[in-house]
Amino acid sequence: MTMLSVRGITRRFGGLVAVSDVSFDVYEGTILAIIGPNGAGKSTAFNLLTGFDRPDAGTVEFEGLPLRGLKPHRITRRGIARTFQDAQLFDEMSVLDNVLVGTHVWTKTGFLGAALHLPGVSREERLAREQALHLLRLVSLEDLADSLAGDVPHGQRRLVEIARALATRPRLLLLDEPAAGLNSAETRQLADTLRRIRDTGVTIVIVEHDMGLVMEISDQVIVLNEGRKIAEGPPRIIQKDPAVIEAYLGGDDADA
Image (cartoon, rainbow, N blue to C red; front, side, top):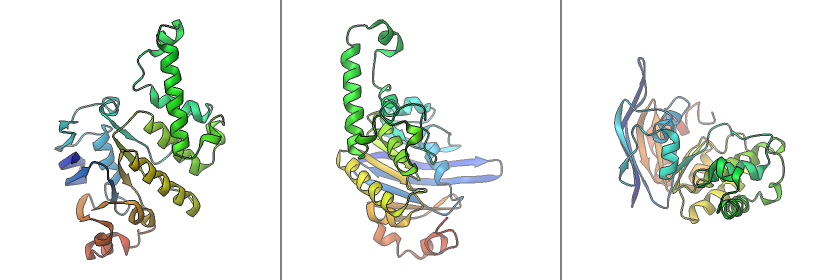
């Protein structure tokens, strides 16, 4: 079943066409990777999908409903969450509290209700805390729940941000280069975590440079080069595609 349908999205910045007539589908229960050399348009495409930028042409539909014109927080409420290339955490807050921030998308009492201790607030706070702890267990960080986010190593900061995104209760999770800066052990942990997340029913789209990770976890791969889609298919096919080998896997930017 198609969860996300992207048709002909195009984004221009002056005379530069960052994304040109790109179309693809994301199917429920899968992991789709978007790859390509630096400047291929990957992050721009991500921003177009999540409301941080708007396409000059084309459409994006999530579960049959258009996303065009919606602000990022509205898209999050629709059921799409994302992370960023640089983990954006509140360093002076605990890891648990950082994850709890994500639950505010679905909690209803708000600041005033909490301040006045209105009926239902305690129950909602308890449920939010339980979910946050569950998500920390899912990403294997439950032992760091009370640690300050600013004291957490880089690789685990990535996992905290993923847990916080999951706290919004998404059906589709978009990850922007989650393996950037990770060592091999941390990358293996990330791969295991993403498979566990997928197995809970969350569909994943990942922009990533780490080809080992991409080929290991992805069901489908899309390759962008100079803003255009040049290939699409399962990892074993993409690995052998001559256009991909020339543009990315075998080029100077393969490890960029």
